[in-house]
Amino acid sequence: MQDTILSSEFSSSPDLVEKLYRSGITKNYSEGDLILDENASIRSIPIVMKGMIKVIRTEEDGREILLYYIKAGESCIMSFLGGMHNEKVL
Image 1 (cartoon, rainbow, N blue to C red):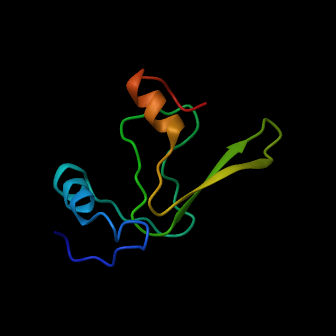
Image 2 (cartoon, rainbow, N blue to C red):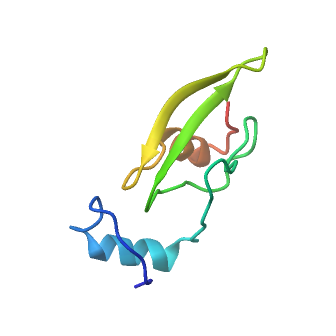
């Protein structure tokens, strides 16, 4: 298993974490990094291992609308659905 500090969300499932590291691609991001742009094709499904992702939508006038947060131990259902159907982020 990777040398990492597991969040409490994964502490009861070390086998799952091992499978995620073995089968997935680990990426690290810094605060403020753009992970997936609006209208981009969904090519992967993020599973947050540590930290949190803020999901926002930008309105036509430039205002950002907070949709939700994806916390450690969670993923995004919209990414799952979009990835399964080869759709773009809306």
